[in-house]
Image (cartoon, rainbow, N blue to C red; front, top):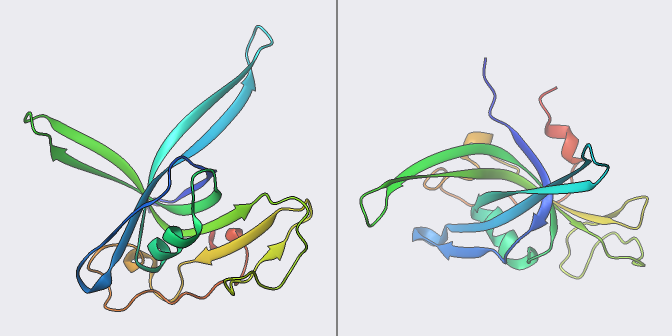
Length: 171
């Protein structure tokens, strides 16, 4: 048995770059930063940041285009994909990407009241420390066909809400 599953919580480093292909299929790419802090042997606090290349397709790309901006905190689930290409000098280059199948936008808006929907009509739930979350899970298709180009004829069903991010964990 094998499993290729990634769960990341981090901040978007740049606004998503969105491209549209044949039949209106959208692809969005953006960097996501995750940070880890620890205290070294000298008692100093050290923070390390890891950057991840996130790729979303179809309906999730359209959601990213409308709602994801630089600095947005996201909870992303997906799988790791590595691809290679030859650069203009003839060198082999490799790039590792996270092919996201679900993302959850985590807003840190202080002082906002809990509501059943925001201005865009998407459900929003208030959490205990004045952080609201907008859930944009990719639903309606098998996980392998959610975010890959040329897989499936119609866009994803954009049902918002429906459980917590932990509901799709395999254990």
